[in-house]
Each structure stands twice: as structure tokens, then as C-alpha cells.
Image (tube, rainbow, N blue to C red):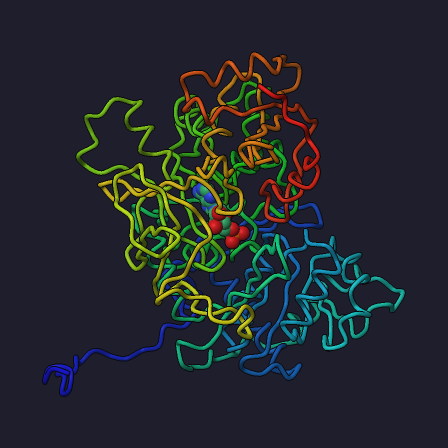
Amino acid sequence: MSSYAMSPLMGQMMNKPMLISSLIEHADRYFGKNEIVSRRVEGDIHRYNYSECHRRSKKLANAFAELGVKIGDRIATLAWNGYRHLEAYYAVSGSGAVLHTINPRLHPEQIAYIANHAEDQYLLFDMTFLPIVQAIAAHCPGIKGYIMMCDRDKLPADGKIPNLMAYEDLIEANSDDFVWPVFDENSASSLCYTSGTTGNPKGALYSHRSTILHSYASSLPDGLNVSARDSVLPVVPMFHVNAWGLPYSAPLNGAKLVFPGPHLDGKSLYEIFEQEKVTFSAGVPTVWLGLLTYVAQNNLKFSTFKRTVIGGSACPPAMMKTLRHTYGVEVVHAWGMTEMSPLGTAGTLMAKHADLTEDEKQAILQKQGHVLYGVEMKIVDDAGQELPWDGKTYGNLLVKGPWIIHSYYKNEGGDVLEDGWFPTGDVATIDTDGYMQITDRSKDVVKSGGEWIGTIDLENVAVSHPAILQAACIGVFHPKWDERPLLLAVKKPGAEVTREELLQFFDGKVAKWWLPDDVVFVESLPLGATGKILKNKLREQFKEHKLPTA
Ligand code: AMP
């Protein structure tokens, strides 16, 4: 060890722990009048500001203290994007407890498993999720009480749920005189379970420090670029990796927050976008599909919407082009995962790209982009050897950084790191400028005669056909090549295209041996709890599919 490391000269900066409570304190003090608008499950629009949000969060924190909630206790939520959910974000984590956001789209059995695994003490829920709570309560003996996020008059009278309280009663009964406790910034702050398409879901346990660092980094201009001039509408749910950190990064920057509540259809979204002068939004591709279809069918334009982050699954280039060219909305294609808080990369251009043609720019923007400072990435082969950054060679994508897990909650799955790197399970290329492109999820890759076929490319070609709304490509058994690609496609309403025409459309767009062997038109594709196409379900459904022999 060098003498420098043995006796370092210490910096003389204050060592203030980075705590989540400081975000809402900051927003209250410096952006107190900036608005938070929510479409409530009650049906109306609720409006207040950061100061009032802080005040109610402190009341809720007092309520938790009274209920006996202690540092490190897990408090669950089953809720849409709304102001009460935001208050819970701050009251729970700010008190030193752990906010466990559960995805209500999961099966009740899975929800009960997750709540028991997390050892949740209390569960807060939106009125819409009362049936879920009724279904799980008997199976979750560890939950001491349930808080329905409503006024007392909305509580069900049947007494079926043990220790059921009304959120607004807790707010009313408690004082806003609360001093946020100061503790180690590495303490756990929140818990999200992975979608768990195989096996039981596993928990990613974030810390205050990781959350604040992620909030800083994700706010950067080449990340989400959130500012006090924005009106931010997170379509991505607060139960899907904390709405990609927006409930933290919006108050950090003083941005107006707009919460859409339970209505995420094209019409409801368009109306609230216009009404609340939304400038920036974020969500998975399936959500934009609904919004864009509504806007096109009604011949509408956006008046304030300028920028959106699309991620969670690959954004089809056709969707990006429509948003950019038809509606003038800048699209930032981002990649990340629950285990990464979630942001890893975002796609924006560099100064040297200014003179490129529109097509050349589009080719860069449709990649998943550049790492945010703090995240490191590399691609490796199956033996763990690092692969070149040439934009062509693809390999397993590994990452590391201060907002990436080193192990799952309760050490499920054991040691997950490979030489200090987290294996993402994604397959990607990285080009000479450091732009990463996901070619597939490793378990979705079609393994044809020992070679890999990336399904995202094939799906992107399919949805660029004017008659195709959605597509998914899966590998099915082939006697000679082990697996060959089968394309499942949903047609746009009223549009026509034949199997042969669609296959011909691939000519010249992908390597010949990548061409799907068959196309099946389906009415819809199965979506998982976070809006992603469930390929494991499709593989199961089509496992007996006989490909035509050439
Ligand atoms: P989740 O933890 O549910 O958010 O899922 C994370 C996974 O979603 C990643 O490992 C990727 O497989 C996929 N994913 C996220 N963003 C993208 C993207 N922009 N393009 C392709 N796949 C993505």
C-alpha cells in the first residue's frame, strides 16, 4: 500500500448524509409553490404544492411513529401515481423505514408472497385495490394494519380487513411538527421486487445514498434532463422501479409533477397532458402506442409536450420517428433495470453529430445510449472475456456502480456478482463512441445453429410495416437449426397484410438467415405487470408450432 493511502490528507468538507427527506425539504423551501397535480382514483383533479406535500408527509411520519413503525421496518404500498403515494414515499423513507412499492398488476398470490417475504408491517393502498387487499389479508399475518388512501366515509363497512384505517384520518389526527431523523446514508430506503418471469420475484433494496446519487445523475442534461421549467408526468408507475426515480428527481429540481392516477389510456393521458401543460414524460413503449393511436385517430397535436424518455423494453424506431417527426417530441431512449434503480444509459447526440443527416441521427438515437456517469459497463463472451466496442460484436452486458445492487434482499440467489460486476442478463453491442445497443434479453435470443438471432431487430422491422401495430419474435423448435424465429404480429385496426407480404417486407432489412421462418397474426400479445410483452408465455403457447419446411 502506498504512503498516500496510509495517511491521506482528509478533505475539510461537511459530511452531511445524503437522505431522501432532504429532497422534500429542499423542494418545500426553495420551490414551495410549485405544483403537484393528481388525477385521483376518486375521479377528480387534486392540486397542491411542494410545501403542502411536505407538511402532509410530516403528519404521516408522525402517524407512523404513533403506530410504532421503527427504523428499517418495511411499509408497503399498492397505489397508482398520486399525491398520497408521494407523501408515503417521503414519510416512510424519511422516517428511516423502508418503502416497499408492490406492483398491483401481479397475481394476488404473488403479492402475498412478496409482502410476506418483505415482512411488511403496514400496507397503504388505493381504493381501487380493495379487492386485492381482501384477497391477501388472510394470507399475510405479519401485516399489522391496512391504510386505505381515502377519507373515512369511503372505508368498507364489512370489517373484513383487520385494523383498517383511513389515510385522511391519520393525516388529520397528527401534527406536522416532525423533524426528519438523521442516520447513515447507506441505510435501506426502499424495496422493489423484480418482475420475476422465472422463479420467485427477488427484492432490490435501495439505500438513501444510492437514491440521491441516482437522482442527481438521472437529472443530468443527457439523462432525463429534468428542470424547474418542466411539467413532468410520469406515466411509468410509482410501483415500477420508483417511476424511474422521478418522484425524487422532480423535487430535487423543482419541477411541477403531474400524476395521471389509474387512467393510462390514450384519451385520458392526452387530456391531462394538455390541461397541465406537460413538457416531459416517461413510460414504456406500450403506453405510447395507446397515446399515439388516440392522437392520430383524432387528428390532434401536442401543444407543450417536448420530450419523453422511453425504456423498459426497446423503443421501436418507427415509434421514435413518429414522435420526433410528426409531433416534434424529442425521444430519449433509456435502458436500465430494477436492480439499477433503474437508469443505466440514455440516448442523446454529441456535438460532433450536429451535421449528420436525419437518418444518421436516428440510427444513433435508436440505440439505448451512453452510460450516465457513475455506471460502468462492458460486454463479455460466455467465458467472461471482454469483447470489443465496435458496434457489431455482441455479448453479455455487465455493469457496476453505486446505484446497482451487489446482492438481492435477504441474499436470495446468493452471490450474484461476477468479479464485482452485475450480469444484467441482456445481450448488447457497444460502438466506438460508447453507445450501447441491446440486441436481446439473453433468454429471448433465438439460437439458430449455434448462432444468435436478436429478436428486437426483427420486431422493429415488423412494426415499421404500416399495417402492423405490435410484434413479438420468439424462437421455436426446428429439427435442423435447433431454433428458428417465429413472428407473432398484431395488425392495426382495419389494416390488411398477408403472411407472405410481411415476410417479403424483411428483404434487405436484415441478414437473410435472420428472416423469420413463419408469421402468425394474433389479436393481442400478453403483457406482464410492467407493460412488457411476456415472451415466456408466448414460447409456452407456441411450443408445438410447426414451422413450414423450406
Ligand atoms: P425491469 O427490471 O422490469 O425494469 O426490467 C429490466 C429489463 O428490461 C432489462 O434488463 C432489459 O432486458 C429490458 N429493458 C429495459 N429498458 C430497455 C430498452 N430501452 N431496450 C431494451 N430492453 C430494455
